[in-house]
Structures are given as C-alpha cells and as structure tokens.
Image 1 (spheres, helix red, strand yellow):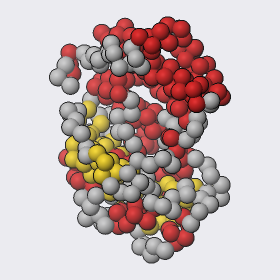
Image 2: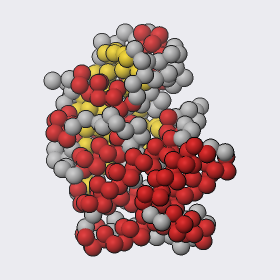
Image 3: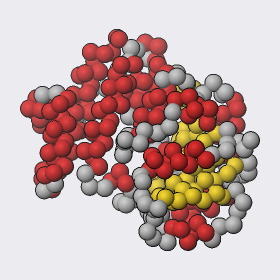
Length: 317
C-alpha cells in the first residue's frame, strides 16, 4: 500500500497550479500518489495538468463544478494511501513537508489527524507573515480540542495543513456535502471527538492569501455564520460543565458581536440581501438589540474583551 495520497482539488487554478504541483514533486519523501481532481475548470487548468508526465499523478475531472467538499470526497474514495494529505492548488509545500508529517504520524500512532504550522504568502509568492508562536501542545486531547475550537474556530486553519489517516475517515465519514464553507471545521470536530489531534510546530507550507479565494466571495460571510452555528453547537455540547455558562457570555461578546459587525458592513456597502440573511441568523441566536448595544459600547469587540476560559486540566494553555 502507498503511504500517502495527496488530494488536490482545483477549479480555475491556472495562476498558481503549476507552482503547487511542482512543490509536491520536489518532496524529499517519494512514496505518494497525487490525485488531481479538476472541478469543471473553464480556464487553462486542464492543459496545465496534461503537461505533467509523472506516474504518481492521477487525474480526474467533473464535467461541471460540484464544489470543494464533493470533489474532495470523490478524490478520497479513489485514494490508495494509508494517509490522506489534503492540499490546495494555490499553496506551496516545503520540501520536507511529507517526510516530516509521515515521521510524526509514526511517532504518534494514536492520533487521528495532524496539522502543521504555516507561513503566509501573497498572490506573488512573497512571505507576508511567518508562522506565529503557538503554545498548543504537540498532542491535543479530545477535551482540549473542543475548548480550543470553541474559542478559536477551525483548529487546522486550512485544509492544506492537514494529514488524516484513511482508516479514521472510514470511521467518522467523509466531508459533509451540504456545507459550502464549514465542512472542514465540522470534520475536525468529528475527528477530535474520537481521536487525539497532532500539531507539528514546524512551518511546512506556504499558505497563499489572495483576493480570489472562495471564502472571500460576496455573501460567503452569511453562509459561514449559518454553517458555523451548527458546528459550534456540537462543540458546546462537548465543553466541560464548569465553563458552559461562561460559553454563552463568550459567544455574545466575541462571536456574535463579530456577526453584528459583518451585518453592519453589508448594510453600509449596499449588500442588503446578505445583510438580511445575517440579520435572520443573528435573531435566531440571541437578542439582536442587545447585541447591537454590545457592539456599539465595545467598539466592535475592541474593548471589554472576554478572554477564553479553560478548565483546570488545561490551565497552562
């Protein structure tokens, strides 16, 4: 059996795809396959892929665009590797990435997935931020993972940082296809509910930030709020009882105030449709007028901040 299947979905990736694939082929570790799945691209993406002749590359395509998570699931079902390495067409993998990650997995056979630190680059490939100092432990228990993700959101940050055991996906299931934005967050929550998660503190990739990313498209904030609400509820149910009452306070002062700010931005920019969608979501969560008042007096959460509160078992986090 192959050790690693690198899963690379792409839609209209002509600007960055070549560099991304080249970084995979330049890995020190060689025992892997690359499953490239073109999700109905209308640019030169198919031609770029066709220029590669490496036997490790396997190419599939959708006749129409089906979305990221449906495409990921299709590719995972074709994977032959013991480990699934998720990847993005616009990011760059450092040469020691796969080698370091497979060693980490072998050293910690109890984990269900691992993620790594990353440097940020802009659209031109210039480093704009080095990986920040992160005090998260190397092995994260299910109890700690629930608390971290409740306070800080998606623990891995991006699919490009993640390696998952194929057997774990067989256990917890594939990505939810009814979600557009938060299916990765939902996946990390499901995995962490049954397995420890590993964190590699070394920066192993360059994560690209650019204006054409899906999450930055108009109206995606409303989708994010709706989908994240369900995932956060799952996490809340896993929180230690000692902090359940504080979790409600934190949601108001941290999460919900941000939602109000996004609604206000949409209103001011004339995007009334998105503002109405966000308004509906906020109303179903809490008292809207109270939240607007908190948003105002806290200057959009910059004042009177509520800090994450962990139980004693992770007091040093």
